Image (cartoon, rainbow, N blue to C red; front, side, top):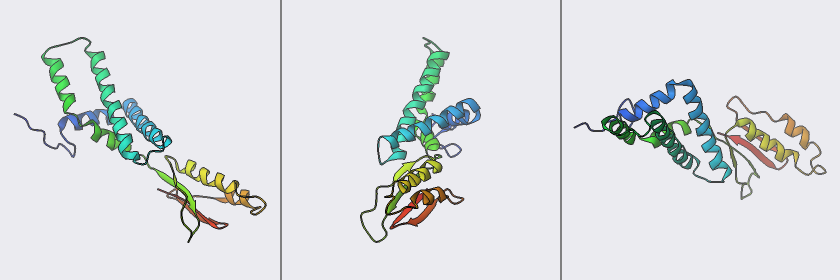
Amino acid sequence: MKTNERYNGWTNYETWLVNLWLDNDQGTQEWVRETALECVEEVISEGESDIHYLATRRMSDLLRGWHDDQVAELMPGSAGVFADLLNSALDSVDWEEIAQHYVEEIELFSAGWNMPGDMPDSEPQIFTSADDALEYIRSDVRNLDHEQYPHAGEWADAMVADAKSEFGDRIAYYHYFVTK
């Protein structure tokens, strides 16, 4: 009897094989990566804090459902040894491991501000794009009181992230930041 042993760094052969096919078909790979990004963005938009875990769960369900649909399309109404073997192999796949692989590839950026030496800090916002995170900060700076900070628009326009897409600067009495 075959036991489920790790295979090429994956839970088992079946998981490795499904991931291999997902990675090697360009159209499927693009769909999987876009779907992972959508799962992460949905969790962020819902204000959930455990982004990777919840996005992985959603992605896992979507991957399994997509494969089930593929089986139903390729083998409609079939029964027998081949259908049973295929379903058994798919039941052995660790869908969460594959989903986690794709979800963890997505970089997350935190953006926010604080007053150094003063608590509490603002709750950072999470973004999947460094440009969106920096634009969030620019918008906050543009919205500073223009009578008190007449150069706020110029400050916002001058904000530039570093090579790692990170930003940090003190403007007025606030420290604004974007970090991975």
